[in-house]
Figure (tube, protein in one colour):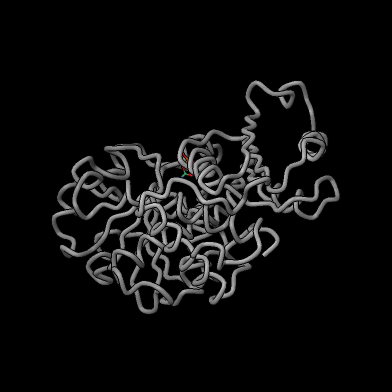
Length: 318
Ligand code: CP
């Protein structure tokens, strides 16, 4: 694997391998081995043109736990605000000797442009581009599902037949798109639920069911996994959005809907959460919620991805 730009590009065996290596990484961390020497001498640049808490910090933690040097670049406070282009920024980083670039950008396709350019000779990881994809989020989501559903017997397994309902702002969600392709590859059965104005044109061709009534979908699917998406108000320029109270009543996971779920349904959210809008505090903080597990698992997944992109052999882990 040279770059990770999209889950759509991943074959099933590649996706399962990433999840298995993340299990190895989690095992190593659980043995309180703080650092592996695997990426000693490599430099990872975190290139963030959009805000982030979880993704940026977990990529930094992942790289450091593999002994890489890390350079954090944030567009705010950089020469990007003086008009410097992606090309000039990338070439500046190349001059500093970057082996891997983790990029988050507001423009869909920016990581692909970087990967296909001759501006920099580094492995590129998409950490979220516009409304397009957020592949490591989908991988950590799949890893979390697999661990919760299969426990210690997770290794080597996919998610065949697992019923997943994803609810909310599908129109603007790169998390939804990366989950769509990865869950299909791993054999899960996916249903999206959203207000009609937050479903993109073309969703009818996706390998997923699309519905508009959350209570009907929950009663019909009785999901193993219920994932609530953040309402992306910063991208809600032209889309019609029902008012917050109406949204919470019709599409939010409130305490009443939470109580009606199967007791073993897991509740996911990629974060950051709008508590009281797409998810109640009762649901977010319940024992069925995996919100903080997702954050912890994100470090293991990002260690696995950096390891595959930047090192040689998996045996280095043993
Ligand atoms: N889930 C996610 O991408 O969170 P951040 O925006 O905080 O990185």
